[in-house]
Amino acid sequence: MRPEDGKRFSEIMYEMAETIQGAMITERGLRVRFKALMDFSIEDIEEAANRLLKTHKFNSMPNVAEFVDAINEASGKIPLEDKAEIEAGKVLSHLRRYGAATSPRFDDPVTRELMNGQWRYGAWARNVLESDLPWWRKDFVRAYKAHSSLGMIENSLLQNLAKVTVKSIPSGRRATA
Image (cartoon, rainbow, N blue to C red):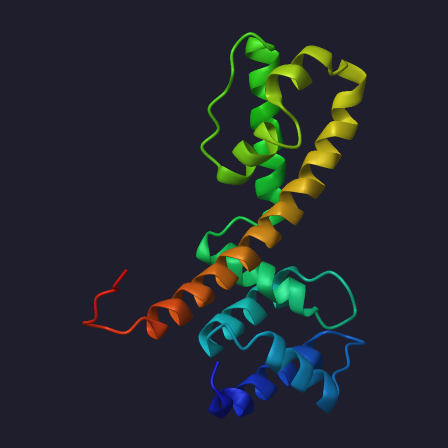
């Protein structure tokens, strides 16, 4: 959103508060929500508000995370928690089908990293007990979410470092030894 979308954003939020019995919104709450949702267009916000009005089950204003989930759902993006669950299912499916005998090739880079680093697939598959799998799944989902967030931070830091480095290299000059 752009700063000039503030008026329409406020209208959307006040309209939501009007239609949800018991919901309240304050000026401070509006500012916080606006800042938190700045990465999305006003059209995304409006569509998410309409979706949430039809599905929200509580007598409170939907929080920022609910707006983000609604926007992601509308755009076809899978929430990180669901993606982590899907990836855990892939690991367990491979384990049940092939055991430790066949090393898997995971397409997802986070899953690949976790199953080569935190849990070395071969050793893990030979030693894991069936009764440990529900706990492993929870640990995997937590690790997946943490690793995904860390990866995004590291990628943005690396991209910024690369931009600064490239800008600092003089063009047209040759290095001399």
